[in-house]
Length: 188
Image (tube, rainbow, N blue to C red; front, side, top):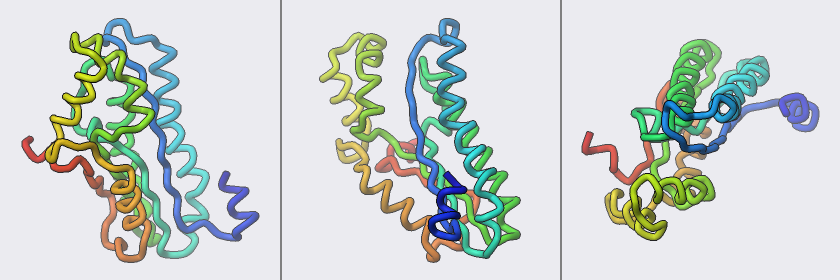
């Protein structure tokens, strides 16, 4: 990926690492293969991509990296041990890269979206319904009701935040994770 960009564009200024995958199971029954698969995509992938891009991103000041974390980066969630662990790891990766890249004028930040009506969320509805003893429609309604404004985060809100973090206007923001959850996490 990095070699292709350098060959076609001659430089690399912005790297956005957006990956999400879900599998749900009780902690003691969580399959090792699913643990490995989720962590490979959501934590190992960003590490290796950033490592490969590092020389190009630090070559000239002004490089930007934005990685997708999650509100699950700040806590746990039943039956989501691999997802939560990987997203916690993303924050450690971002903060360490920010410290090391700052001397080169590189900023590395994350966004932490809350509930969005996406394929990733819809892919876990059946498991969520089973866990909660609810119908899928009831789970969707409960997810929506848990959000201030009784709505989901719009993917365009996340995209706009990523765009801002990748812009020169965000040059003073480094090592941060911007939560985009309509204020759901404001209650603690």
